Image (cartoon, helix red, strand yellow):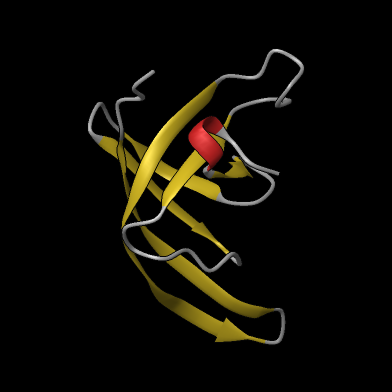
Length: 84
């Protein structure tokens, strides 16, 4: 389940929903709890089947809403350069 450099992989549109994307990063929301400082791999399309992957670091992550379906989180990730 690891992504680029062992980072945890999340599929956009399934695991987390992109709200806004820029050259600096992406705003996300979802039911996954991410930790600020955590390196994640965000996959567009079908990961492993030609989907695009980008590495990002979680900048902020907070509770947006609590409800019958669980806790919805929202936050910001900043794109990371992958060394290797």
